[in-house]
Image (cartoon, rainbow, N blue to C red; front, side, top):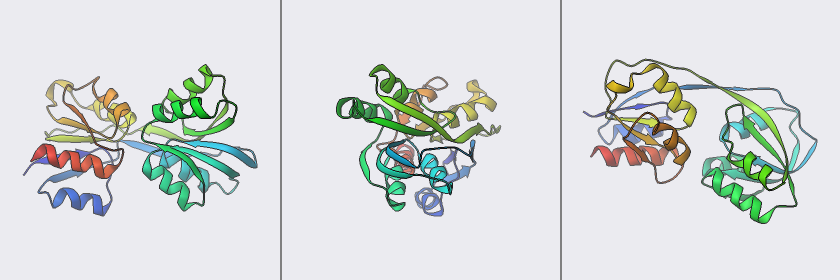
Length: 218
């Protein structure tokens, strides 16, 4: 039976997708997320969220503000915002697409960007370069949780650049011959620093990563 390693613990329904495809699964959390206290204005006109963790931390804080408009990256992030009663003006698959949209359509607006301590520089750089006012607010922290594996896997599933760095911190590059299946281009760019066997899922969801993996292993 072919085996895969997931660098994120999956939900029961996600595990079933692999098991029903006849794939053996080993899973662990390569990174640890911690929500942190933060201060924000009572009323926020435009908020940017690039991850579900940012949304969860924001609404986990009882002091959270009223938000008029949300802009986000990822289908799951959008769904989570809408579950919390938020109006999502624009959702894109990648941060680069969202930054292009903001620069083109919202040059005169100002934003609050809710993010983690290890975040992509794509959106802040684009806003700065185009003189768009924004304030960055850290609402969660990501720490690496490296773990060494002595066995081989046909594929390794990666869901963030941090997860990639965490895995390769403890595992010998010369001994790893697995395909790295990545949730998006940013994660794939990080994986390519360590592996020449990198593929990208069709969309930025865990289910898409699993589907791509199953197709590769057939």
